[in-house]
Length: 139
Image 1 (tube, one colour):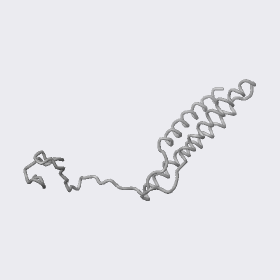
Image 2: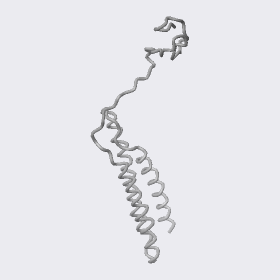
Image 3: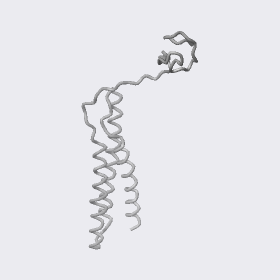
Image 4: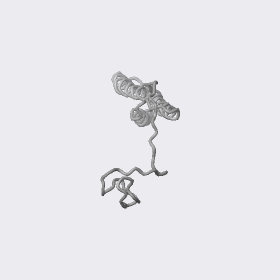
């Protein structure tokens, strides 16, 4: 191929001409074009809500509620069952966060949620809910 600036012969896969040093722009069907997404006017807070629900279930019901009921020799299964329902809500919030972002991207908007919060709320909630389930079954 020839350099469009200095007309000297250069290899086909060149990005820069090594004779004149200018960048070679190749019009090629394989060139990936980046799609510009519009600013999203909505705020997606489902991921953060899921993470908040996870911490409420973990700290308030599992740690504090379980400790208090264990100290009074009461039925310790109750806070674990309640927190398991809260973890299920946290998983639903995480999934909703990813769904809203996916739908927004289909409409041409930037994702407005934080998918890391969504992943954390989903996976940690599932893990701790399974631990709670084994705790309820064992006792």
